[in-house]
Image (cartoon, rainbow, N blue to C red):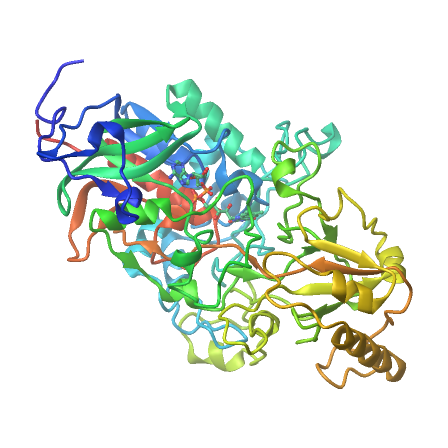
Length: 592
Ligand SMILES: Cc1cc2nc3c(=O)[nH]c(=O)nc-3n(C[C@H](O)[C@H](O)[C@H](O)COP(=O)(O)OP(=O)(O)OC[C@H]3O[C@@H](n4cnc5c(N)ncnc54)[C@H](O)[C@@H]3O)c2cc1C
């Protein structure tokens, strides 16, 4: 390998997540008494992509197809990120071949106007698109259909040929755009095995999205370095000049990877980083430990922190704070740490040991009451999540019409806000929420309340023969104060009296149905689950990262959940921005 000016950078900036934390980035770049040591490179490629999820792998293959050599750095021992765990509802419209065949008239302009429509509000009054960055949405709109056709070309298949408006959120009200990816023959990361053959084209899953992209990338010569964590970005000087490459760690060893053209950050967001997420909502303290997509992959803000350390700005912060879509969700499964409604980890999964249990999926919230740390109810248990705009949600929709907001009935669902209200002791977070039920409820739901369905070992599930004993048993690291047994007894007795009269005088649960009276009694973890990141690094239409002065950081790109300015759940935004970033990164011209 020849050595040029960029191979040894005498005044190299060492900046990134480690630098923010005050740590040393890597042995080869550790500060020396006489000034920084020269930077040497262990590996190099034209484009270095961080993360092998929806953004990263898409960017990697796109860059490779454009002629660049590509290295992907992935901290996990398999590819896919949250995308591979996902339900693969994929709202890429804008005039796709599938929309055309179904007689649906869509266009890039319609997508753009839908996703910037100021007049759309949710039943809780939150506007879905008002704070979207027009430049970013324009780029998405223009690349929506091309991204979709590119995925089809890679062999991604769908459970039906007609787009609809089902599931997902925030994909515009005008026309159906949502496609649903079929799993095909690929093993599910949730179970470790493929679906039965007869279900391979009817079962939707992110495995059917990410494996074809992976196959395409590997075949094209993209090199994927698994179990490699990007710890920092190298820039010519701390807040000026080009991005030169990254620092990474692998099995305890530190290495530097040079990016001759660019680095693309596809690190998947920040929701798993307690300090980072609390910038958006101070209530989100440690007890919200059940992030959707974990323990397959985290959202630790490493991309955002590395970008900020070299001067990048954050962007579109309202979209993360607003009560929209699936940023924060009610637990769909109880008695386990990771209770996201659309993700169950089964014993065959590679990550089942870390997940701890499968969880008990709740079919009817009439079967439980939910209490806080003090054993007190706080809301109607049948209450649900925040909503997000999708096809046909606003009836008689006319783009940009004041009537859209006027026609939306104000009907806030405050289950999550009530859950996070806490116990009035000055703590910011709401603390653990427990679902309390009895043996009859378990029978009605056909639950088997023992491991591996519930996580007893890690304190996410308790049982006892009396309500008072149950309260006394609840002890785990986030239960800051003991639950007074008499309080839980009083709560259960009062709720049972509501069942007698058919009216919930405290929280208006519609016709409370079942008493909690038959031992054994159970307490199952049901604390709200964090999901999306919708704010991150500032990018422009090319997905180039922009600094605090509004200037592009040369050689740095970002997309997906680590990028800001775009209020939309998931895969469409991530794949489309990876599609853009990969091509743009490969097209960078760098003077010697
Ligand atoms: C259960 C579930 C269901 C979902 N269902 C849907 C759905 O139906 N429709 C939809 O549109 N969206 C869905 N989503 C959301 C969607 O999966 C994500 O929005 C999307 O995957 C985000 O893409 P990304 O590239 O930003 O991040 P990811 O796909 O999560 O990829 C990020 C990758 O970066 C890696 N990484 C992070 N930091 C580093 C580092 N420092 N060094 C190296 N690697 C790093 C991670 O390990 C990960 O592999 C779902 C998500 C989950 C969890």
